[in-house]
Image (cartoon, rainbow, N blue to C red):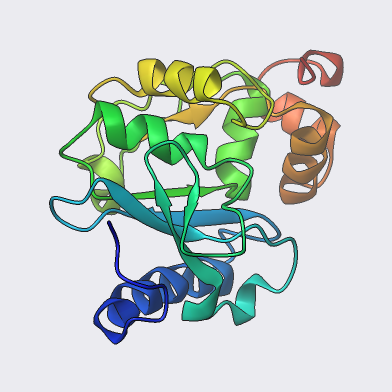
Length: 195
């Protein structure tokens, strides 16, 4: 069992998770949604962001809670993120994984909406290798969804959510200037960008 939520022995881990989220916000990788989870060595639980909707740039260690491997909060009045099953299932399937980040970077959204494979080729990303695609565009809010995501990830280091829907097309369109421009860039028509 994890120590009490405010136990000083866990403050550094909680601050690391909060700092990671603030960093992703500052770098523009989490414009409005996303989270990170961390599993300490040998733990059968993990740290994750409590269920919040706004203010990610101000997340602190008090916003990071412990959850068991079924996604239930431990020693906290708050619940974990609605997508906590990303973490429960990936951590269960992959004992080698200690940290997971889930976020919506604009350029990855461009690839997912266009139905194109994401191939990390630059030096900073080449070590990631092939990035498989997860075909369900809705949030991962159940153990079954988490298991399907873990199946899609397999032994890879990252997974791309395929076809994020109209919201994803809108964000991707903002990045590229317009959906028409995005469609031309991928050799298709705007109507084929939406699932």
